[in-house]
Structure formats: structure tokens, C-alpha cells
Length: 233
Image (cartoon, rainbow, N blue to C red; front, side, top):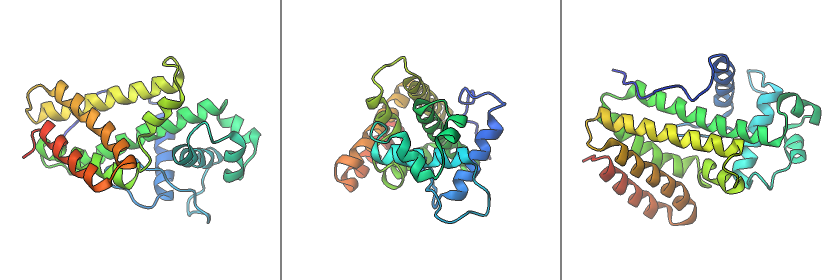
């Protein structure tokens, strides 16, 4: 049985969906392991069975470097060198570095949507979806986003709230909270908006805390607090 947890789709137009889905398929082909979480696929050393477009290769390299080393520390020349491409190719697909940063965050957001859709497909009930959400947030922090939240990290480097990057971050957080609120409402929880806010705050905490503190302690504390917020026995 499938439960719908989505409202509107990410603000992306229908004309953008085929391109985004194709990129996600390529990213999946290039990745190694994926559970209920976002992930950053690695760039293959050997040619893959499917051709990788110049845009996708640039974006994959940039995503990996931005997340591991920070946006400001990674220059365009470094991205070009590791992607094995030219500046003209970069500017054919991205007007500048900020556009590449925006595409990085949009990919993270799209991958999260994909994994929530996967959870819908296997959930046996709204209660089960809540279980998957809590487990997935913990798993993501310890297996995939091991250097903090990409959206929080990007916000720290873009203090202007009116910038394109900060708008993407704000929209992502708003949709994520709405999604959790729908989960909670479907499961019959009282005060779903307030509880969703608590879960968003706890997710922020586990993504940052697992990078800074003892992983097992943070995971235990997060799981206990998140299950309490979601009223999971």
C-alpha cells in the first residue's frame, strides 16, 4: 500500500523533470550504496556502461568537492582539473560558480525527494513511514552526510538571505518540514506542525553533532528524542 507524502513537487517545472531524472539515474549508476538518505556519488575512474554527460560530470565533481572541502575553498580551476574538462564547457552549462552551487543543492534536494518516494513505496502504514523517517535521518548522518548538513554548510558561506543559494536552502527546509508534518498528520499525531518543527531541529542537530561529537552517543540521543517527538513506541 502506498501513502502520498508529497504536496507540490519541489517548485521544479515539468519541463525540468526529465533532465533531473536522467541526472539522478546517472548519479545512481555512479554511486556505491544508498539507503534512505541523500548521497554524493563518486566520479568513476573507469568509463561506466552509460555515457556521462559533460554537465553531469562537472556537477558530480563539484558536489563532491563542495561537500567535502567547502564551497569557498574550491575554485573553478580545481573543479575543471578534476572533471577533466574546459572552462568553456563549464560556462556552456553553468553561468558561473554560484549557478553550480545552486545545482549542487538542488541535486541534494532532489535526491532526498527520491528517497522519500522510495520510503512511500515500501511503507505498510503511516506509522511505518514515521519509523522510516526517523531511521533514515539517523542513517543519513552516519553513512552519507558525515560532514554535516550540506544546506547548513552552504548557508554559513552565503550570509545574504536574498541570494539564490539561501533561497534554495529556505525552500528545501520548508518542504522538508511540510513533508514531516504530513507524515505526522497521516499517523494521527496531535500538533503535527509543532512536532514536525521538532524533528527538523533534531535532524539539524544529528547532522552537525555526528560530525563534531561521539557518533554512537549522538545517534542514541537523536533516536530517543526523535522517537519521542514522533510518539513512536
